[in-house]
Image (tube, rainbow, N blue to C red):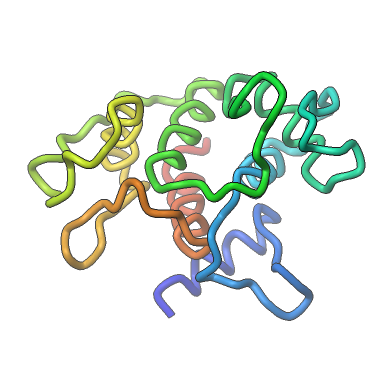
Length: 174
């Protein structure tokens, strides 16, 4: 499968785990809890204050990651009291989250590429995500599909996120 190398990379580098002991579920959507947990693992699982959201219990697998991400301005809650950990993230949201994480780390986020020159659905990118998506494309993290579409508002699959994170690590990490 096209994602085999990326899944292997994400698993071997302890960024992602399977959805069970025998499955990765590459076509399943990635949730907000999953993406902050992946970045939290990438960061080395630093100590973090407990999540301050009513929909994230202290015993949840993602509680530390959900506490860490907002504290570092990587991902915010959907409100002052809710994080929506089980909500799917879109491809443009992944770009925004990685852009914020790269900025948090002090990485170069100046690789900006025009979206309208390459993608048939460039106008579908939300205003809040435009700079982040231009950076993600310019950095080679997000690529279009075979039809030259970004699909910015489509849910990001676990396979897509594994590929994006592998490119992020191989391209931007020192």
